[in-house]
Image (cartoon, rainbow, N blue to C red; front, top):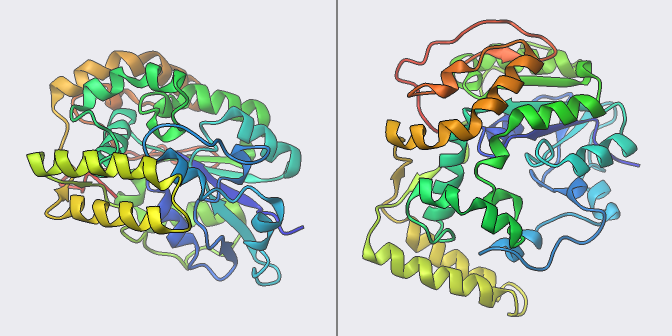
Length: 329
């Protein structure tokens, strides 16, 4: 069976798309052509309902085993096979499925300041016209209701950033030596060093990869009456797309989303007031994360997070500078 040897397992909006693209350039690694197949998220077909746009996303799941294995069939002989589904860190059941099928799998985890991650996550969905709430903190307050209503994992803005709980479960399923954990900012501040660490962790030649390409930057269109109107149309179109034949519904929503993104700029920075509103929700989990890793994450409780540093299979204990670095990746 053609199954992966390793996974980029999380977290969403933490540079996993860029890391996937970087690793695909290594001659000894083969990354799945579908970056996020999500195979281990279910035991069968994905759900058939959820929040705005969820059904369309579920249709992209590679859930049939034959289709999943086919992603890795073209891998050159001897190459390590990998895929990147950033929800594997979040989902306990996915971790157990991986363990049962590939007990020797290696897992790569990227941790980003959980409030910055949540804000990027919300911005992604709001700018795409899917989240109807135009205030980040209020959108986070709706999370429990949305989870209860069966909205997909990507709507779990706060819960996706509870890395302490997630890693605690992952370490109960896989030996620590099979897990590499590092900070998102390290890809920006020391890309070559980070890629050497990843290659060393996977057991392939170091010194080949030197940069992480810029990928998947979150856009932030201006909040205007036009945006609100187009967003309402897009949400209605997403619902209609579930019953339209073929790709007709997708073509409609793609065109609306393209119009929404016109004139978009980079994601707007969080205010200290916004961070203050959410820090209490993360504090105990950050302390758990520190206990699990032996590393400090106190900067995530400060006015500005996203600092560098590497933990996991090959910890360096280094702190990286943050001067003038881009907010998104």
